[in-house]
Image (cartoon, rainbow, N blue to C red; front, side):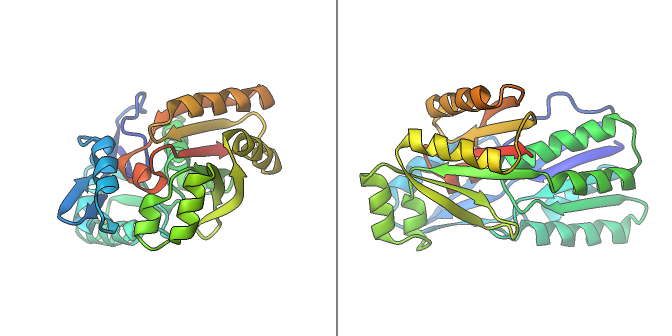
Length: 280
């Protein structure tokens, strides 16, 4: 195999339907752990089971990044590898991938491996996968593709809308008072991925309609016009479809697609959460 596009399961995209010639696509799984329960996010396990387990558990939970050997097993398969990791602001996956790169290059110095800390999650990583596949199809050289991917990354973004903070409360990342307010007052937290790869709240919106209004305003402020936009939802297809229609009305030239969140993104977004990756 000449090319391999490799991601961790911080990317929702389980299958690349139209890969470039002689190009593979692989997802290296993260794990979510609560008590004695371990969820391996390899696409074979149901995120519904994960969320039910988290809801029933009184324990805190945590995610574990892939081991370097898991990344290395994917890197060694191709002459050229383009890898995209979950933000280093939430996970050690990027550092694990870097270690794997050195491991593989020491034994196979002829192989070329590019790794990007996406500083993001979910649908923004999917955008980078699609772009990498398109550039491979164009027949560009490895170094040129790496440069174009890095440049493209400067124009991709992530927004999120959360309506449930139970897991974040259990983990101590959000106070019980804030978590209870979000639930009782039907508040939707609208936020984005920062330049440092952390998740930051933009606005606390009372209800879904106000959250949609805030999302549309943020898209416009970021310069979104007619680009590609991906909505990933955690068991919230109805609101995801409503949001997609609203975006299309405001930006009729845009190219919108939809998918379900991975186990890892379902873990962070929780039930009802929506993630939006877009070009601007």
